[in-house]
Image (cartoon, rainbow, N blue to C red; front, top):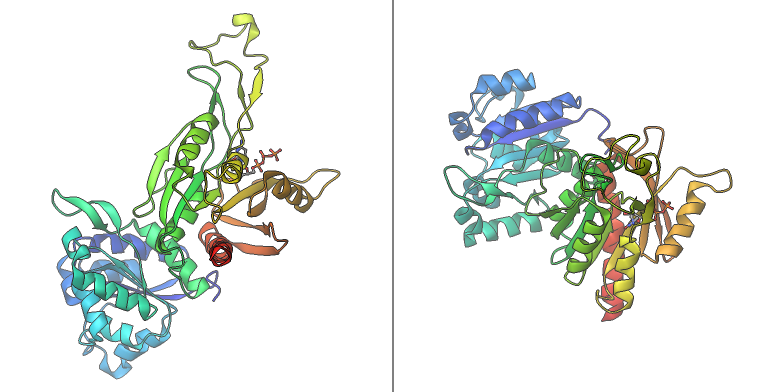
Length: 420
Ligand code: CTP
């Protein structure tokens, strides 16, 4: 399915306090040009009024199979949908889906649908951990329903824990990438994944630094999709745009390349998959002034900052694996930001980088002239140490994350099989 086209998206809303976030989800899809039909359960309307959903979606809203009977809408809405996203989904609604109930418009719509159904649960931690809910989630996943991981954090009232609804744009972007891919396998169940993201900042003095334009968006999109495929994710992040934390991921914040290198090296032995998406500064100032440097003073230190090379985090992780400090079954992936040169194409430069760094996979991005850095879209070529070359077609950074993780999963599975 091409999600650049206008899709018919059904946003199902069930009766939980997070129902208000569904309003933003509807707006997110509408702003991307999709047609949205909101189907709330009767209880959802205790939290958000029908008029709000009608105004935001531009479509009529009903909750019962007995409205507009002549249009057979309890069947038609599900048949015509390209994607159904239920957010929030209560524990009760999950149980009703498992039982195959069809006694309101939303449950009937889900029973009819053949398109991807994405469910974003939101409930108190006790309900999420209850054996009944755990079993319901597992049954739904076995049937092909995409049940998203909830975020951890503040719940209704004073308590906090897993069960919180992720932010609407997190749900929306993952759901659209799933709609394009058609499915979301749980192929990283049990994998411990470390992702570097964002740009490093190398201090010159307390007010100045050398930095770059990386937004961290590709690294965070990889983390979002990996979490939903079952991975336990740690992100070591430099400077990034203001991005929501992927559900249940741990984010370690660092500033400089040295700090990022230390944070990765300390944790490397506890991880199985490494994706180095950060834009790491190759050099840092040889000295960092304690006080602000002044023009014309301090031996003109500002006019000629002396630089020394930073450690290569990707190459160091490969070396840790060679030394046996990182599992031989691990998968290590890097990115190659290339503009090309008079002598070499970007692909030639990426081939050489793959060899030099010794990683298992390398994604070539052509950068410069507004391409990739800070943009919502990406594209490139995925190179593997075993010689395969795969074009990653243009798409959102979430679409690219799906393609990249498909390949990472293949390499991981192949290594695991070889070691048995
Ligand atoms: N990388 C790293 N540590 C560094 C520099 C780069 O881990 N000190 C990683 C990046 O995260 C990326 C890959 O190496 O996954 C390639 O980054 P890139 O900037 O394209 O390559 P460089 O090694 O910096 O080479 P050059 O700038 O010469 O192209």
